[in-house]
Image (cartoon, rainbow, N blue to C red; front, top):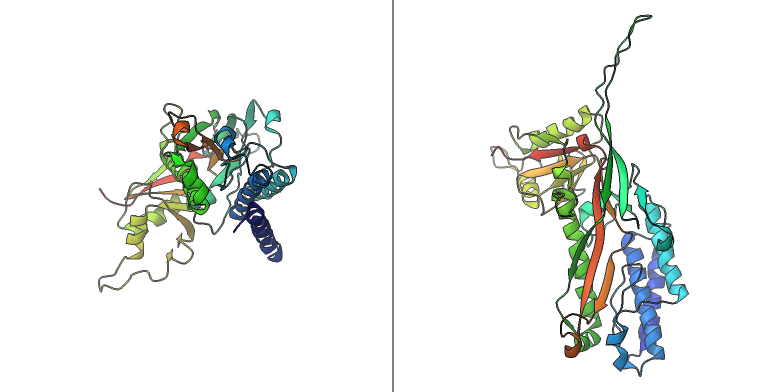
Length: 386
């Protein structure tokens, strides 16, 4: 018979194995590994409490509360979430978060009580390149900035109209034009809740509950991609990159490969780096399956690199949230996803008659926004002549 202590010891060993694997490879924890350790820490915290109060199962529903300051994994047994945790587990999560923040090019955040007002968003939020397809690829490749402050500001630049010229002695120097615009923004809430979860089902199927809760979090990550691309700026929604004034466009020219290559030139002409293509999966399939007049694959090698997911040497992120026939090429320093440091997960039985039915619901949410510092670093590309 498996006891709570057995479960706790197994989780401790799993967390240690993850950390040991990274140490043996001579690297920091990846984002995925840090989240796994944080999740296991939350489960260990809960199991420690269960060991002390194993006889107090009737207190389950009254103990439901917010997850805390980080994304945590699900647990089994009497309590689903606890609001408090031992200092050792909290330090483990903070240490992991600090390493992740360093990889993201951010400073680790301190006490949220010290963070209020407005934060200045600087250029250069760094993407994280991880082999972790459970996190949408676009999120891993674009600049990502985390903040606990609800409001932010940044400077949006236009391309330089370069009129520099040779000037005779005493002559009037030409004027080159560059415009800068102060932009203020505010984080918006992206959230959803689960359907009712039976208390005893959760107790009997902790592994299934883990998948259930992870799906809620993954759902948020997927939809943030939608708003990053298409947010309309209405009713508190962020303004996505495709609805930002001043972005470039590339019309369809001859075929897909010619068109996508011309988009690369469009960014190079304004001295920006083509560093990410976003393509609908159906269009990527069309590109890969292009054939010559003899029916042979036209590009088994060359501009398309399947193994590395590259087109014209540029990394490709596949997104189902793009309309087929449309793609985006961008300099990843031109646009940034801004979010709170952690997705918040909360469990409650306070909805309707959930308490009377021994049910509860899980809410997953985060606040996010989009900052476009260089609209001319984004090219909307038409992949059809329609």
